[in-house]
Length: 257
Image 1: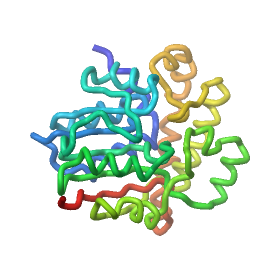
Image 2 (image 1 turned 30 degrees about the vertical axis):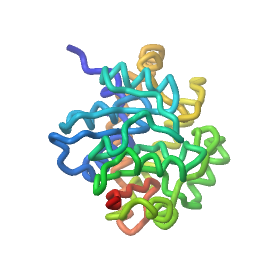
Image 3 (image 1 turned 45 degrees about the vertical axis):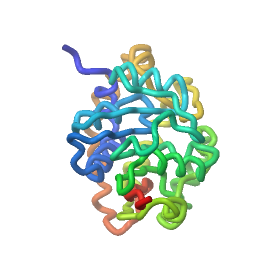
């Protein structure tokens, strides 16, 4: 059986590989637990998290992303509303929010919903852009890679602003950043390439699907040939150990009722 298209794309994306690694590292043991992931875009995050064990539900903000996730994982995939998640109170032991919180209009209501569906002392993992003013961000804006085009209501969060948002209902355990300038440069070039192919954004930004992969199969094959060099360039992030990254990962637990 051939490998699912989303895994083929995933293996050629340094940023997605780093993101899934960061999420898995923060997840902890999930065997026997009820878990929820929100914001998986094309579904590869949902697929790989479900392979960790546990019983998972998935959700996202647009029909396109929900269809893509459902195509990969099958069942228990939901179109969600930031002001009301379609789940019972205290249904989940673990909730993973993967690049979704920056897309919602009412962040306070969304965090309240996260707290509602998570059991007391349950684990929350939030991945989001790290809000920074850098030369590379200014270049991305000049290239038209704006927050609006990515479907972002806000640029992202700092450690302080995200902790402040979560702390009414959650105890923050850890915050760390990852994805340094070399990987971010790779993403800048990849986003430019997607735009040149005419891929349109949505409330969840630019989402690459299996249909896109089939439509541009020759380009994907060509990119696959140069990917080893792309990968080596992105790994030069290790030369910047003291620099903050462009992605922020925060783990927290639900405060007791």
